[in-house]
Every structure is written in C-alpha cells, then in structure tokens.
Amino acid sequence: MTELESLIKGDFSDKDFERARNYLLGSMTTDLEAAEDIAVWFGLQKLLKDELLSVDEYINRLNSENRNSVIDAWREMLEGKEMLIATLAPANTDFSNLTANINF
Image (cartoon, rainbow, N blue to C red; front, side, top):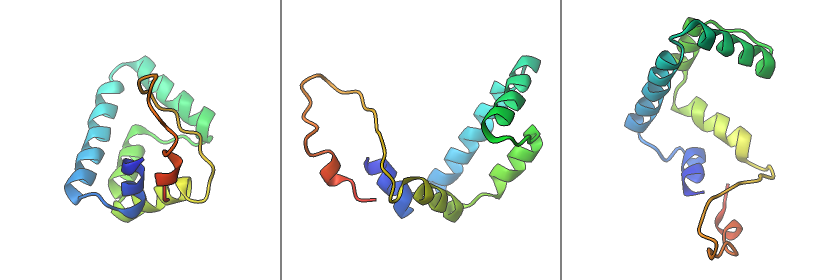
C-alpha cells in the first residue's frame, strides 16, 4: 500500500520514472519478437481498448509520458474508489489494521 500511496503523491525520483519506462520498453521489445506475439499484441488492444496502435505508435506514446501524467493516471484510478486488493501472506498474518493505514 505504501508504494501505491507513493505513486499518487508523486513520491518517486526521475531516475525511478526513467527506469520504469525503460523496463517497459525493453520488455515489450523482447516480448514482441515473433509474429504470433505481435498478433496477440493487436488482438489484446482490440479486445480491451478497441484501439489499435502499432508498436512504434505505442513507444512514441510511452516516450511522451511524464511524471505528472503518471501521477494523474494513478490518482484517477485509485482516489475515491472502492478497491479489492489481493495479497499473499502467511496464514497467521493480522490484517485488521490494513485499511486504517490507506490514505489515498
């Protein structure tokens, strides 16, 4: 939960932002090496967004994002909304105070 709060507050460095962007670009490049991977790429876009972007268009869009656009997107997704959060922990973990510490 602390990480989500940090995203909403913009409490991350420019270096972290660039690292995350480069990770997305790198993993996308390696994930789209085969023709069938590219077909899945377009199929998922059509299914989930009804929008088709080429890989280059997506990369350009990703490169045009900045810290503020990421912060705004996370706030829009998380603020003022009920969420269901799944977590993995040992069976004897006490979660009674979990929601008391969430301040989005």
